[in-house]
Image (cartoon, rainbow, N blue to C red; front, side, top):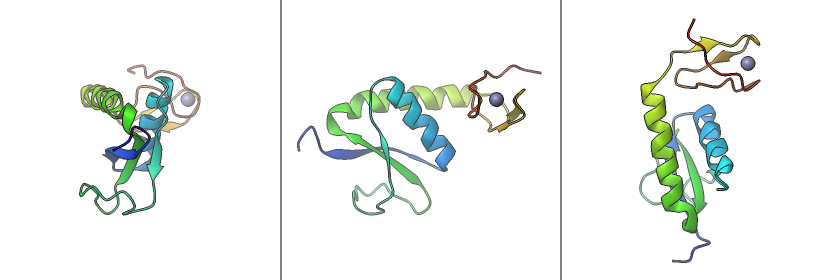
Length: 106
Ligand SMILES: [Zn+2]
């Protein structure tokens, strides 16, 4: 095992959730990418339809911790909401994916 190896760090039900995770990681200087090569990194955790994120092994532990925080934050959550820019934002996202505005309870 080398530090540059790509390893799966988590799975997401949809691309929006995966993108949110990628941007969170990139804010922390971790480059993550979607593994769309189904089966190329078969660690036995893949499921049809899920989007897997991969990072270099040296970032794995930190990325996992960040994603765990993200999931907790989403569990504590907000409902789906409509931003003042008019875009609909999915449940669990506190910032508008379009303009970056923050969720404000109505
Ligand atoms: Zn917005």
